[in-house]
Image 1 (cartoon, chains in turn blue, yellow):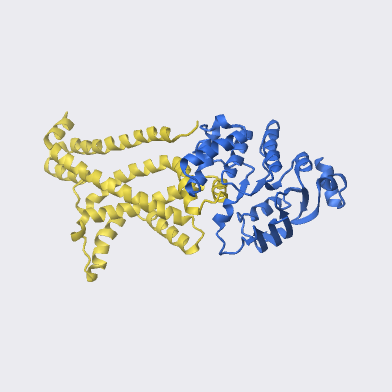
Image 2 (image 1 turned 180 degrees about the vertical axis):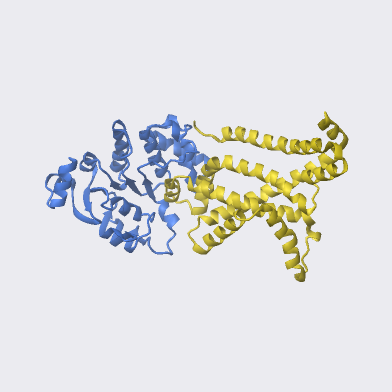
Length: 243
Length: 226
């Protein structure tokens, strides 16, 4: 299978602080990869390096075979194909739900207004919110906001989706509805990289789980291996705390 | 009722003067909004020299009185650039100099308002826009500025009101706007000095009140989803 994302010796420092200390990783097409680890381990930073929301300090990141750290790469074009979902949704509060979804495709002239709207409504239906098209984000619950955010990303028709702790800011009763949408997406064959604290989700949906600590990959394997037979003491210690 | 007397006797001169004041204010507001937006955007730029220049400009304007700025622009520039053939007269004289000064002045304050407005928008908004593939400029225009504008609006209207009142200082270089007109009338009609200046005050009060009331209406209009 083709590798969608490849990182080689990826390092990221914020001033004196080394957040990522050399990450080598290959993510295959249609793979669902979950990143777990204690806070401050660098998982979110790693994710943000994959679409250059963070400029990397050293190493290389290839997406679709292109080195996105190369200054010559059109990063905007690259980002169109990499959807991102944030912990705090980051919906555009001044726009209705449907405008949130259609803004990028129409602004970037990928679709005309009509087509974008039709597509937007289809996506809303997919996340179960077709009746909220004309609502403003402030009128939605957290779970609804996050589902809209997923629909907004999908509107660009990406072939990779990055999820940065998508359920961490949600009330517990709303976590399920967001995870359900993500499960459907995974089942449809989307390549997904998910930073998460939802161990149940990782166990059920991930093809591979990566445990990160202190800016390095400590252990990786299929969910069964990581959750039932972790080898590294740091992994065991972490899982004991969260499970 | 001597105010009524003053108005009924001198209303043509007051209307002409009001027109000057309003003309100067509107021109200044248009240019200052443009200038302020550009300077404000440059001031959040990551490019150090740009940031330095904008900070310097804002500091100079804020650190000197408007009246001095009027003199520097009108008399100072005229003399300094005279050897190169520059004169205010062929390009609108004192009126143009007045608008230029007020624009430079209000532009600096507007820049601070714009910068503050942009910085008040959560940085996740820019990240979300960029991660969809929107370029920086488009993200700023479509996502950040519309949200910033909402927080900026009360300060912008406030600056508009200040600018309108600041036009009175342009009287010192001989523009017959409301204040200068008052001075001329007061010099001729000694007995009604109080009434004349109260009339002048009234002519400022009315447009200022309209501005601040319309701000309230606009604020309600731009509120979304509340």
